[in-house]
Amino acid sequence: MRRVIAISLLAALQAWGELVTWTAPQTEPVHRRLQQTLTVQLNVLKKDTFGTAPPKLDVSFRDASGRLVQASFSGSEGNAGRKLPNLRHGMSATIVGSEQSDTTQANALKAQMEDTGLLSGRLARGQTLETTAGNLDKRPVFEVASFTAESGTSGSNGRRMNAPAENKAIVVLFQPCGNTLQASVTQDRVRSALFSNNDNSFNQALSECSRGGSQFTGEVVGPIDGCPSSEDYFTTYEAIHALMTKDTRWQEARYKMMVLPSNWGGSIGVGTVGGGLTWYDERYVSDPVMYLHEVGHNWRLHHANGPYAYQEYQDTSSSMGYCCDMRCYNFLHSWQLGFSSYFRELSHSEILNSATGISLTIPALGSTAQSGVKILSDNSRSTDAYIVLSFRGTTGYDRHLIGTQYANKVQVSHWDGDNTQDAQPTHLLHTVARDQTILISDTDRDSNRVSTQIKLTVKPGSSSSSVEVLLCAKLTSDGESAPTPCGDGGTAAPTTTPARTVAPTTSPSTPGTTVASDWTSYFLSSPAGKMPVAALGCKDNFCSYMRLRYRTDIAFNTATGTRREVAGDVSSAICQSSQLVTKVSVVTNSDGKGY
Image (cartoon, rainbow, N blue to C red; front, side, top):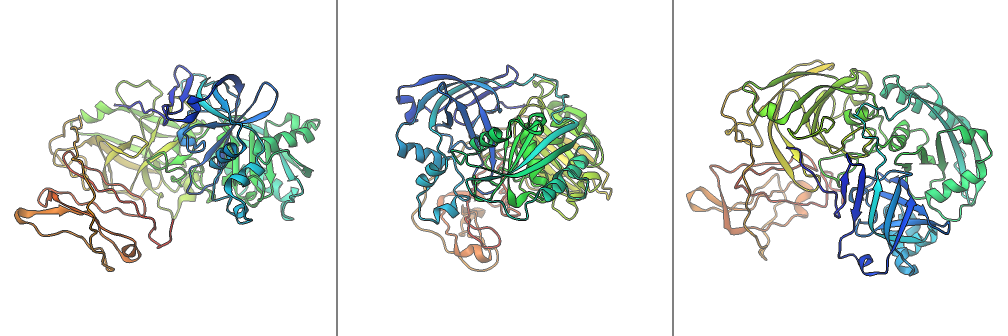
């Protein structure tokens, strides 16, 4: 049942064959220009802003003349990571495309590859976004039409550990082009924040999150002064490298960590995907999660996302989610790094065909390494993780979840990778409390949730070191919002999902009425127990922003209809066959602030 999900923009990843290919949409202008074919070595940097805009990848290479050239993947929303294939720092690639020779167009492309929120301070100086981006980043731009590369993965069986036990680093405090670091950013402070065993240091956090399996040693140097020719991160690294190249500490260190003034570069943290380069905004030098996150990119970890690709960082139970509350890695990331492993592997059909359901005791991830449950499709390879279950208690390193929405709950996640080396995002599908039953809904990573026909019941209890769960097939009598617990009897539903058909709709010109009160439903009376569809209400601050539209020629039956309310600012409703859902986007959240 595992689906092959195409990467956006016709990108295809064939991880088992170790081939990565990508092609821009044929509507992109780059296809109509005279093109070059280049064989290059890529620099791949993941720029973390932790904002609402999608994180961007900074991809560059040296051309035949030795220039450092920025690669713009046409039609990728400015190199949005979710729109690109599985790239790795240092990989050799064949790219087809053309250099953008028009300065105005090149600056426009650079602007698309920046996070506009973090450029707001520079925009306040009166410059346009395009001029600002062009003035800061002096690299020429090569527009990529197609791309082919060897992924460089080992094709391992998923057991090789990404995180070495001993890691040697050097930290450089760098002051570029007259921009000075804050007086509080001293060698002693950074050394203590990174390499000490003090509580809340990076080394202490990594030791805890790795179950004592990994640690960093190193030195801090600087501040040193220099002036890169371009305000981009790789050019900045090369300027530092030129200053430090004869220093044996720099030569011997596998990990090169650079601390920069907050007005340089624009991102909060940056890490190469693979490799050992990281850059940090000076304001975050005392946050261990920032180092766990960026070094995680060095170890080929992607972000901890919500169900969809555009929901980057939204699994805040992981250090690969939003920064900077102290968190260790979620199960999948911990497994990729070799800190955790699976204790049970199930197949989709095994669960659906079980007459009594499958009972499991899942140990807490924070205190037990062998703590994951892998659910595979029947035609997948042994290393494919289709759906993963884990229990986030409050013991061991998950003590940091005490008082959060994740404490003592079962996580249901999706992952598209084939082995520990795949830099694929994790997708948190469900967080399930004790004495709760859900229907597991997978994701197509784009905008749809997909029924698996599997139910998960988390049994009552109070232990934070393990949890009892039961997996079973969905019953024909189960509603989507309130399925009966596994073990309560009934007839299993068909194991194939019926085809869904939705009539085309048009938007009427007259909006409904908004009422500033408690939740208010807008349904007009109609004979025979049927009412026109207008599945929307409002509450408090929302009511001043909403307008309703409905159609009187489409109706639902009150006797068989299913009502869903979202519990929070971001949630989802799932239709059964022959049902219809209304999708609503709201530009404020529950505290009334605009986004």
